[in-house]
Amino acid sequence: MARVLTGIQSTGTPHLGNVLGAIQPAIEMAKDPENESFLFIADLHSLTQIKDGSLLRENTSAVAAAWLACGLDTSRTVFYRQSDVPEVTELAWYLSCYFPYQRMTLAHSFKDKSDRLADVNAGLFSYPMLMAADILLYDAHLVPVGKDQLQHLEMTRSVAQRINHQFDPEHKRKILVVPKPLSREDNMLIPGTDGDKMSKSKGNTLSIFADPKTLKKAINKQIVTDATSLEAPKDPDGSVVFKLYQTLVSAHDAEEMAEKLRAGGYGWGHAKKDLLEAIVDGYAQPRARFEELMSDREAINDELKKGAEKAREVAAKTLGRVRSAMGY
Ligand code: ADP
Ligand code: TRP
Image (tube, rainbow, N blue to C red; front, side):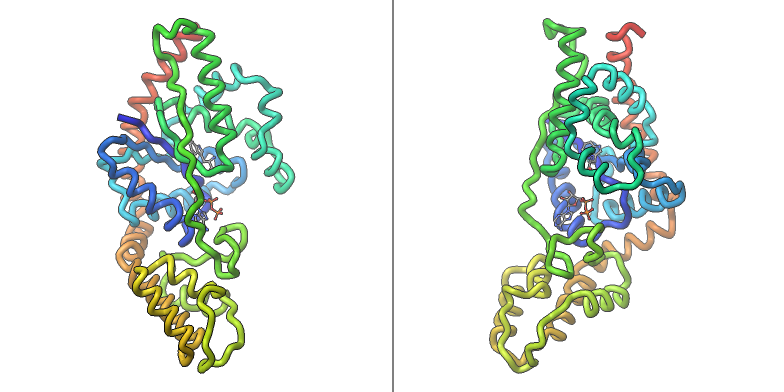
């Protein structure tokens, strides 16, 4: 049985791109009885960028509520908050002392962030060691990540190999499991309301959790359509409204909209209305569940605490092996 582990950034309520591109596929994958899955909210990593405690908590709640509302089964997935397992920071320290400073300076992600962000703190620099600890603490075999995280996975493998080699050159006792990345092809790239990749940083997102009125406003205002008259035939393939609709409905329903657009007599306003309906109706259940959870933070906390208890059992064992290997 493979243990699959991944971390989710806690940067606010997930948008449609996150739901279709990350949450739904991960929930499907967690159903595979061949895998054991660990999923956590990386709220310690968030501290590199967010300094407001109430915002940190709000973001964590929103992310947790979104995953639960989309159907994450916590009896099959260990679902927890990174900061509820403080063992991870101790392991991160040990790892830091076994990883060359020179290699840390080669991290693309740090270079990229330090070019963009005003607050370039030391935590941002040591981010990869905390991420390595996230993975190694739980003996993960497979780590699904996007391409931008592959270098961090390489660093994780390298530091685990260094420690194993130092204390267990003959592979007689297992200290750390060397994980493999499961490269997530971004094959399903959901466009934002401006046609670019949907992303929080671009302000072009739609939320499945927003109330229908807000969503209607976002669709009508943010998606720019050309001035083709209602009667004129339209090209579905060049249109964001159609592309978004297509990601949400069956191939049959998408073809129906395409035909109406090509035929003429069906305006962008109609298409937007159908898109709105597809989101509002298609996600009625998750939206209701999300609202329910967000108004009952205790329920979210309880789920995360239960997950953390299970996670800590594994964490204590790994940390015990590492401490004794190092002579503590
Ligand atoms: P954002 O770009 O909004 O900051 P993140 O980088 O936090 O989103 O992405 C979180 C997860 O959601 C990642 O697994 C990423 O691949 C997925 N994701 C984000 N945007 C999209 C999108 N537009 N289409 C498909 N998947 C996406
Ligand atoms: N760094 C990852 C990201 O930006 C989030 C993350 C933190 C993570 N720890 C992890 C992902 C451990 C996988 C495994 O998306």
